Length: 510
View: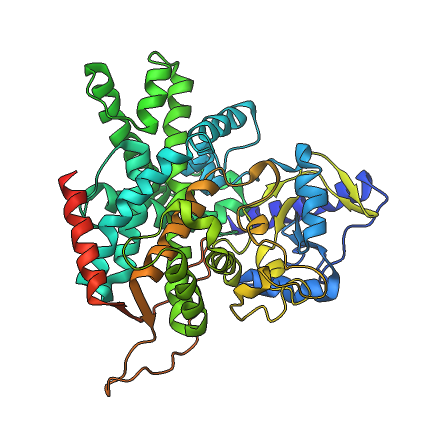
């Protein structure tokens, strides 16, 4: 078996090298020196590759070529290269690489973010954009506001569980929008199921996490063959995903048939086409699952970063609270209508996106045909990745990039403001995240509401005094979360507690 794998590897590399030589007289983009057969495989970083790639970009440039077992990877590390290729040439840069484990075996290539660039994908995006658009934004904002009123009292009751409450909030918003489903707590079976899908999703997406991604033909080996354990893992992940995708969808379809369905994204899809073909039905189910996947774990990461930032940069918190007090006052909660009058809070939100981006490396694109850019040959089939982290920590674009400085978007530095990081936080080209509206609105109301009602500070030591925190490392997963950390969360006044208690009672009665 090992000899067959080695022979296949050698043949693959030789064919790839031959194809590169034959297809273009232009050189490949620069990159680390590679070995003739395995390329840069031994150089590839394990975890937090965005940091290593950013360091390499300083030496090799904003467009860099890597070869991993005969496969070309192009890393883009500047706004210009990303705009020129992923945006302006999006017609040929919008495909996704074939992911054997995640796609072929588990089935994640049916969800909109990972689906190949086909007419089905474009139809799915249109459905998502019709459900999440400026036209539907008032309805989406109403769902966010109603769940926020239930969330804030939870922080009063058990502030130490802020991360669990944060995930409950995001799940409750997304499930309300997609399924008109109200979740009572984090132990809700549907929430547990969805969280498991989120955890599963990151494993097979990681580069070369499974040998079958390097040698796709291994998917044909018998289940009993040594080394075929990945097939059992794939089946388990697939069952979990399909259970999450179908359970509530089937419930609502039955309710639509009986005329008892509440308004939701699923209800709209089913009522708009009550007799779909099997292919249409599969598309609708995956569109709904994509809405959850696009807006859940990513939003949780951003909200967690807010707590960490507030506990480490108290002067930023005080400035934002002063603005909220001046605009909103102390007798009510902030609303979406206040956003235009809260420029500092809006600038703080931009820093949350930038300081540690939720997705440090964009989901990979796949080049659909040979291309030449600035004299460099980019071969068809190359995996093209935008290093968002590198851009958002470029000191030429964002001075003092490891500090949180909302003022960078308000005051001119060297003649112009720093770029809006949202241009690099939600993907690129025709693959930009269609759930951006929900994510941005959720983050705004979360930040403004917390700042209006609570003080967030560093953890307290045994003597009751705040103590300095060690640096918190972010996880090295596709969706990067802050590692374990503590903070204090206390109501700003007794009046705040009364306000939240009153609002909660009113919300429960409604």
